Length: 448
Image 1 (tube, rainbow, N blue to C red):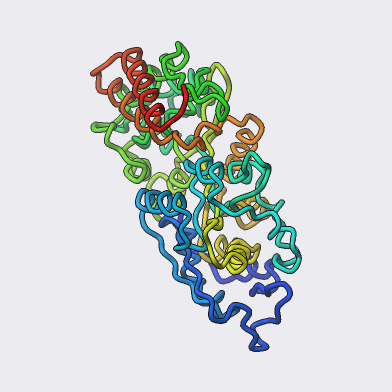
Image 2: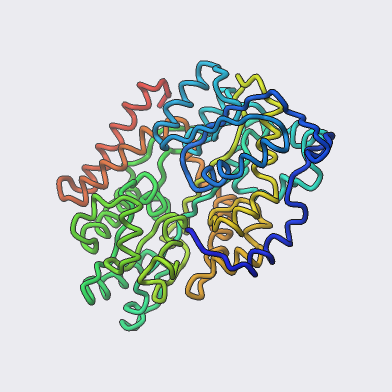
């Protein structure tokens, strides 16, 4: 969410940062003419996203400070993942810093394709005093940590699954409150659907992300006991009930063409007031509260993901910066990561660039971020923290870091589409997804 910051706010925010430049430990400041990485070329690759775009803008600062030359590659998400999966699997040295993609983290870390970062973090000659790895939320470091307990990625972004109602005024007029449970959601949608021509519900058609919080809320899961037992469990009574419930939301309360809505289209529909209620990541839903771009900024309300019979299971996705095992410039790569995710730079991203997905607790709890993420009176920053803490305690996001989850993800997309379109019953579609997932996992060499 892009925001314009007044000069006074900017000065207040940057004053809290202290020194604006990161001085590398054990090295003289750039002002003395010392260039600790002179002659080094670092090849960095992440997928294209707001924070990488900010880093690219700030690269001249790092290059001036260190003398290094940085070549930054930021293709689209699917292209990045295909390219890095191949590069890492072959032990290549094309990249020195990479994004540790959430849905591939188990595969990449478990296969030993990334460099452990703990020694760099603990080395006072390589990490600035006060850099503070503990400041990154524990629930976000967990997916970047291997079964060996070592850290392989430093989180740079988080997307938490929350709920928003762009026309909460219509809910209030119906004598109801913002829905907290799955039962509440149905009651609200039955009351407000098509009121003033506004459809009741819409969400991103990546159902492997948007459906699973409902699947788990009904007592179902993707795998039997990840990461130890990867047997899919998509055909259980709980999973079938969840799929029937969720498909009904899309089918009965969605706008025309609801099955084709992407995350961006969902956001635009909410901002325009064409659809009321949605469950999705905060990086999208927060935009509905931006008065500069949203027609519904004054009527939007926010809350946690709905609680079902089995509890509340908000989705939490995180990506981190890591070092490929094949990198020939590991020390320099760490210096880049330490700079990129220093307290100075992460706060600068908030204050000067309007970045809305921080991973440091000090940023999320800062007065500046709290003010920026208090949208129409709702503390969205607090919802982020609550969701991350729930995920950290329950461990329910383990399903998504499994290396073969992308195959099951596609099966879930197909299943919800088949149910919502009326082509198959929930039982038939989920049994089909179960069989397809087992076949895909066996082809991938997983014993199920």
